[in-house]
Image (cartoon, one colour):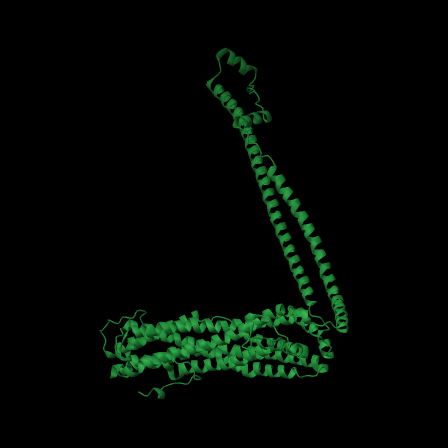
Length: 590
């Protein structure tokens, strides 16, 4: 079978899952029952195809779940590149003064090959880092795509496992080339990361080392006077902003004071309620005595039946009927008395329960109010802290003196003023550091994904192969692969294919971004350094606007790359799946 005839280019639609033509295609158990021999050869091929499909699905799930690039916002840091270059333009203009051009940054930890490092070379370090990154990311992209072309080196290795005769001469070299290609990608990305980390380290040391050069600076009275004037103007603007924030802080303090008073009052109320003595619970005897006092027993008054009845009772005695009537009336009288006393006792008990519940509810309400007031106090204190942070930010803004670029325009700056710009303009340097930090994060993510994830997968893949092949004189003598090991190798190959697919997409996106935006930004930055001082401010505004537009363009490229990453991964892993099944079928036909 000619491998080249059935391969699809990487721009085609994703490959459909492989389906055998015979009835065995309906076999789709989750377990790989390799010992079921009821079917014929077609059934065995169908089972293997299904097993490969399941391995492909598992590999795709695992690589999408574990891949750092597929599961992170890898693209966001790249948007920092134009902003970083915009700040570099400011540094180039600052360093263009002849007194600054030879200024050395004295730090033994960040020396170049000549043992010196100058302020003016800071943008050069960045320029070289960006250009080198494009070159190396292009190489990574080329290597990654070559590893996947027409199924790639992995598919060839999988095919060789089904053809022991071809494997004798070709399997070992292919394994070594696979290892070398993965190692080359890892090395290239590591070199990129080192350059950006070095640039980042230089920026961190710049201000500290600049202080060491102040001793050699000649004082210029006129420049110092201008600096003081500019500082006063900045101070005035800062003072207005500071007063506004301070006024807001005072209002918050008043609110906090009121909230604190409310909290104190609530705490006292809770304490008062907690200190109230519990309601006494009288004993049964006391309850009965209280009821008897409120409802005293009244003597029973016997029913009057008249003179004749009384005379008859005196002469002949009381009849049984009369006796029982009087007895019942007496019992009813005393029962009624006892019922009144019982109701009094029960009502007293209900009242005590009500008062206890009321006291408990009042304590709970007071505690809840205390908690609410404490939360309110905490929110106000947090708001106060935020206001103070804004005040601190306003103070930092003072460091960016409005007259710095005017001094550059007049070309009247002395070395001390240049250093003051680098020291005081924390917004410029801080912005560069922040944007560069994001780029360092991106390349660190790439390096980690290649050196740890992909290289580990390649090492595991090759380790299983080495355990199951017998070598003699650098040639494969025999391949001892059971079905389980073969599936493990295939699954590992698919995961490597998925990892390499993500690396290829991200590195290609970076190269495209570098060609369309980063290189152009660097060219514009270098042209900006030659602009006349009188046109500098306007030119830099235009450059900054272009950089902002470039950020949107980069965002568009990265969004498209992210959207295609999953389908590309599925397509490339699916191609490897198809080739593995076809190789197995060719082996069975032979």
